[in-house]
Length: 190
Length: 164
Image (cartoon, rainbow over all chains, first blue to last red; front, side, top):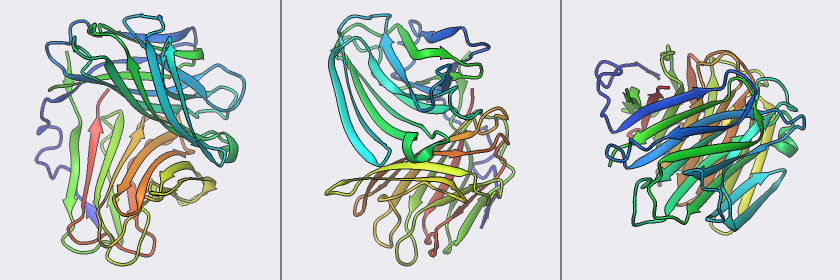
């Protein structure tokens, strides 16, 4: 069966304005370990945020690097996270509490074959609430060229124990991010 | 200026069983694709299998993580000829499987194509998949097959584009 395109009417013209691209950062060089989005003006428009990432860093080892999140540049011990991870023939559950950042997902490394990037879809719920701690969730994976041992897929969740509205979204990698690494920020209305 | 996106590109509700479904001439105007399948198969049980640009070479890699109701499970495959985006969240004839497959940077020519998928079937289990198509070609078509079964009448398949 061949599905014709544009069957929703003219393709692109029937989009409800409930999910919107706000900003994309594509790194032009390998001189940064972090990416920050200023979201201070978004609270009146959006309920939730989503960040879509394809990432690789300068580590010379094969495997995956961590992608970490914090809010409002708060590097205090105000976070907790869990992840369920599969790879190398096992499934493991891990968590950290009273920690300085949230594990958002994983990225690729320069130690792997060329052109392999890890990827993460990361959601930040009720980011502007002043009555709730902030909750995140992620789906992430990095399928290394040595799939049998180093590829991984994971589900993450996190909490920032603060009643402050999030005004800045900060991501940092274990190493410098390589050219072509991409972070896209989307707003979801509510 | 914010850009509305999650743009519907194609959808179908099957009027008859389909052994394969082809999404072709995919617009290159977006950054990511999201494929949403809600359905069952006409006979037996089957996984959803994806190929890009008609490539049947040994260029697909994947790792999966599943919950079966009583245990965890993981599987992986390297240099295989297709990308399976289900595992324990497989299709059967009774309960609908919901599969959401995210194809990242599908139009990039400097990256292998990374895939994230979630598959859920209330009777069989839940699965997360990370996949990679070892090609820097932009994805212009997607072929879905269902092993020895067909996607059943009434199942839905939709494709969305995500701008960046």
